[in-house]
Length: 251
Image (spheres, rainbow, N blue to C red):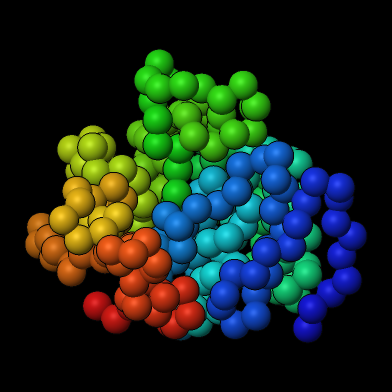
């Protein structure tokens, strides 16, 4: 059941194109991207499982997983209180308070504050290392894009801790960080099990990378079929529209 909400002057209510879900976004803040939508469709989540999203931002991944999966509990960890408060209002608007929780904390503190009892960890972390690329002067946007508050290793280390044995860790990142991702996952006993690339269109190099790993798993990596975002005319492909409107992909 939808709840009444009061939007702030710079906020808007966006349609997630998924089971009637809507999300509050601030035009002056970082807004979620297609990467998060692809991750929510890619990760394996089974009925009754407990899921945690590290660096949840607007809460888009917990919201999408609440509709696309049978997860019993979905937590989102966000360090910025203003951003976390907005995510909580989105959860409340969609009537998901009993199933989705937004936690305000530094993800690096999670091992001291949370139990390692999650079946699935998902994350759409900052992509850029500090010292590379333009750092946005707007703090919230800078934190979302650059590894200012946490490094890639922090995210993988904490994710590995929070998982049960044989739990799954799923991440979306840039293809150029593939070697870093693989090395760090194995360092923390997360064995990559499936990988998928997203391409802007046919004939273009991939610009999005999705990996799912198993805690304590044995080596065996599956390459999933790639996804193409746009047709030649610039419109979304039928496959991508299916990701927006349909359930998780079957693997």
